[in-house]
Image (cartoon, rainbow, N blue to C red; front, side, top):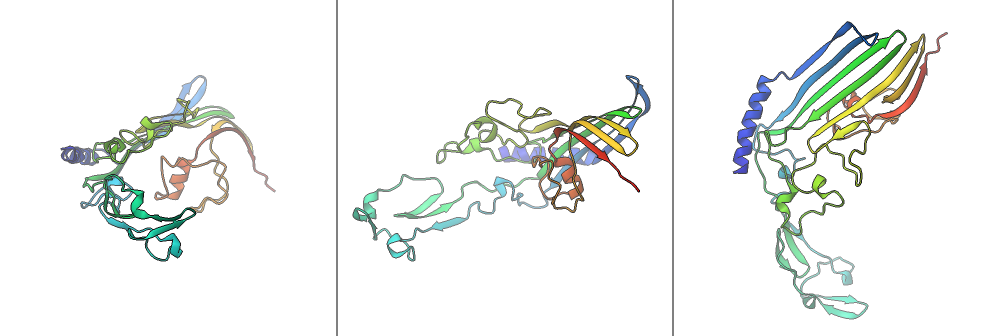
Amino acid sequence: MRLKKAKQLGIVAVSLSALTPFFVQAAGGAGTKFLGGDFSYNGFIRLDTAFSTDDRVQQANQFGDLANGVPIRRVVGNPALNFAQPLLPTDALIGPAGIIPLGGLGVLPPTEGVSDLQGTNDTFTRYVPKKSQLLNYHLLRFEITPTLAWGDWSLITRLRAVYDPDHLGYEEFAAGDYANINGGFDGGDTPNRQFQGRPDKLGYAVPGQKNPLLFERSGRNYQVDLPAFFLQWNSGNTTVRIGNQTIAWGQLLFFRIMDTANGLDLRRHLILNRAVEEYADSRESAPGIRITTQITD
């Protein structure tokens, strides 16, 4: 029933994707006065979507893991024979206390995914089912960069947001569905955010802190942050920036060799997009003071 509903929502998502412009960019405000300064802005709205052309699920999704449903035989080596041969139920384990028959160790209770149990050897089959879905990935991105300038001084702000529509197109792996199997998943200090219920894709949870990052607000399927909020002064060949900002250090040749002043936030991208856009959008901003000057002959 859930899968049928997910497919129906997937058809709706594809229809909306077809009707929605893939990329909408806007700029304006030039010549507008605000607080005695010149106001301008630019921004965009973009929908990133990956469609499935067959019944295979993306391997990064738990439902598409290639190990699902594949039986794996697990055999323990005999320590008395330097692990060169399997430890059989009829063997005896030689230890400090002498010879301990394996038959006296008892039998483990029935465990989901485990079959053909023979002493310490068994067969394990990953019990997450394979599922078919129409969409593998979709993310709505929004960004706007307003600028207010007073001669040599300017206030530059960059606001960006991402939103994952969740069940609108694909069925997610939910750890809560397996709470009664082998003890479920250990949620640690933040069980409701990370390992229970529906997946937490974009949230950043730190025990004891509601909003651990000053310039970010995020949740299970959304993230809003302010990567640029600084005051800039230009005078000839010298530029000074004070505030929250990111720094691209050195020449960027896909791999970040010296461009390590700001860390990367892998919630927004991984390593599969265009490098220039990926790094510019993934750098984690930080408050600072930056002074640059160009020396010419």
